[in-house]
Image 1 (tube, helix red, strand yellow):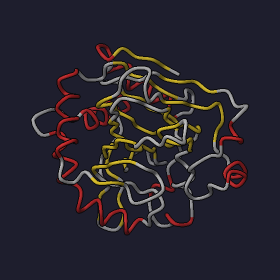
Image 2 (tube, rainbow, N blue to C red):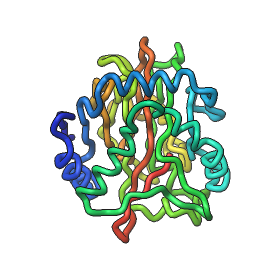
Image 3 (cartoon, one colour):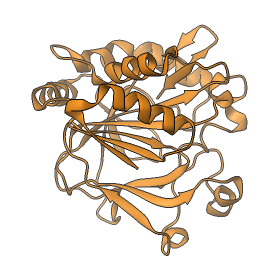
Image 4 (cartoon, rainbow, N blue to C red):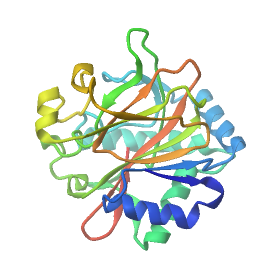
Length: 263
């Protein structure tokens, strides 16, 4: 893992992203990617958004935007079209740190960074989520991988299946250090492992007994931090007694050199 001070991040982020897409490093943790006033504005916009709704799947949380998890591309893009204004409103009166990241990565890698396309639709560039605590679980978000939900029959004809490396992008608009930590296991997705865990096509959730003897690292992320993680690694979020808001998206590299994003 590479750690970067947010005050000196521009060239370093580009270099680190290059190492990520080449599978030379597994994660990049940028401390203080944006200042507190930006985070406060985004968190405030999230909390007052009329589009803030519970997720409609088996992953408990409140969300502005959309996830492609367990959806066909057509269903995902239809909701993207309906959600783009509400996602943009998250940055009303402040900057958009996710688009700044994409610009920085594209500039330093000298690559085009764009929305993933399907038919005539464009994917959202991010979504905002507050995972909902479950007293019966030791996790706010259960351990999962991000590649099972991409490389599956459901996505045939969608260009995300052509990427070589999948990066999870997590920007923390509200997170107290030591609460809701990002737990990354020293275990990568494989078709055989996903079949054993019975998470083919979704990647969620990996059973506790399968991970009980697996080493892991807890990242005590805090408000303003940003993490880029190779999405093949199984990861989750530990419990939090504090309000936690994360902006999440995915970034992948195509063989022609372009980078595409979706949520």
